[in-house]
Length: 243
Image 1 (cartoon, one colour):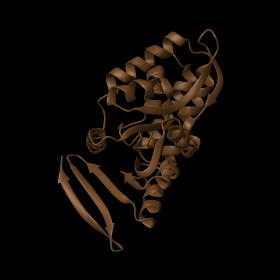
Image 2 (cartoon, helix red, strand yellow):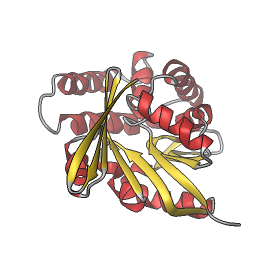
Image 3 (cartoon, rainbow, N blue to C red):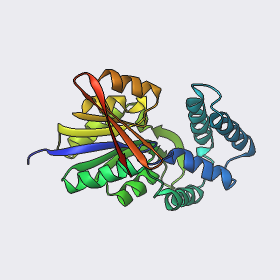
């Protein structure tokens, strides 16, 4: 069988406007499933991020949430966890950017095999990807025992997304020829380096610099306007459209 063409999407910050991982942690915190010290640490990190206290404050916030989640994971009941996952999915499933949503629909019509790679928990990724029409996906796995309880062992997808993409490409008999990728941070750089058409969408500073140096397409969505910058003859050309 001839290998199929594909497009790979980052989810958090690219299709989804926030982080599914973060939303689950906040839902567990709001519902009192995390202890008071952990809740306070999360709230403090969130406040620092909201006022942009430093250039690295987002990653400090992210690391705080992930550390808090990992520390509390083995104390969570499967029922409380699944309730939080379902609540986040139901309340957040339509909270997506318009440009990648339209891109997803167009590529599906054109016969692309649609992949998603995310560092968020596979339970929420599965629901989100099925809802939005992806063909296959990988998310972070937090190991459970035979009773459904978390063991504390995890396989985190975002550490090296190129490994995840190679796994999906091999599994689904896909071809890198004509491939497309879209992401928003430096964590997506490796998969964007692999595809023929990389798109940096609302990129952070690190991805923006890398994309610009390599002549990748840059796309910014702000309110109801999309700004696309395509490099032609060593210069970026502006293309605007209303949503």
